[in-house]
Structures are given as C-alpha cells and as structure tokens.
Length: 201
Image 1: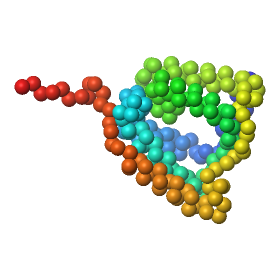
Image 2: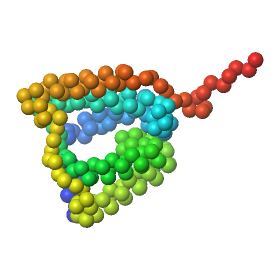
Image 3: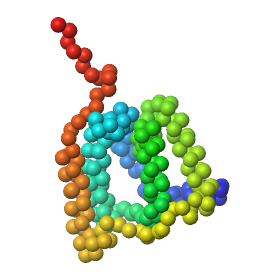
Image 4: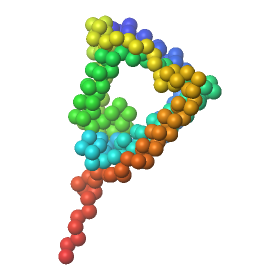
C-alpha cells in the first residue's frame, strides 16, 4: 500500500504541471473566483439541489464551455497537456453515485471544500479528513475493487469521434455549453439572514 501511495505522488510530481509559482497563481485566481461567486457556500449547493439557486450550474456550464475551447487549442499549440483516463462503466456509475450522495450530504465538492477549510469551516475539515482516509482505503483495496469497475471502453474523447472535424466539434461544444449558462434562469437562493425583513407599518 505504501509503495502504491509513493508511486502515486511520483507520478504527480513528474507530470510537469509548470513552476510552483504558476500553480500557486492559478490556485489563487481559482479561489478568488469561487469566493466571489460564493459557490463555496453550503446554501449555494443545497439551493441547487432544491432547484432554488442556479448559480452553480450557470458557473459550471460557462466554465466548462470556456475551458474546453481554451484547453483544446492550448494542447494543439503545445502549451498544455492532459492525461485521459479510460472509461470504466462500473466505476463511473458507482463513483458518480457515491459522489452525488456525499455532495448532497456534505454540501461541498472537491473544488470548493479546500476553500471552505481555508475559511475555517470545521465541518468541512472533518469531511476533508474523511475524504483522505477514503482515498487511502481505495488505494489499498483497489486490487480487490478492480473487477467491479466494469468493462474498459478505452480513452475516448468527444473530438476523437469526429475525425477531421475536431476543432469544429470543440468550438460547437464549448459555445453550446456557454449558451446554456446564459439560458439557465438567474435564480438565487437567499440565506435567512440575507432576506429583507418586511418594513413595519
């Protein structure tokens, strides 16, 4: 188990994500955007689950659409790279279900959780510690869990399904997602303390 954990860190360290300064800069920008949009708040996640707040899906659709276009062309220019993971159907279904249940209970995701920890949220810190132990358990138990991961469909990407039209497909996909972000109603859940009390007559 320890050997697998050490190997995991070696893989991450050798992937060449850029200088530490660049990684820190991107992290600060990401954190600032998340805090500005307030999507690290439990009320935003819970409001989305109850369809009473559309801030999270609006931000996600726009960010994924914009990042899809930007990342694809950065990779084509040799400025970035990514590692595509194989599609294992069983693993996606089981993992997606567990992720959804945990997010509904916790009110956070792996992106917003560390930001809430930095803000001093003890409940999120406990959840983050649980996530670390969950990851350690998965790393240890992976040889026994591998059979239930299901069939491996390989490293598929959307552009690879439209050979010869990759750039056009990425552009259409990204623009469509950003358009959806603008079409989603601008509904915002108000915290009880943020609600305006009716003026006394």
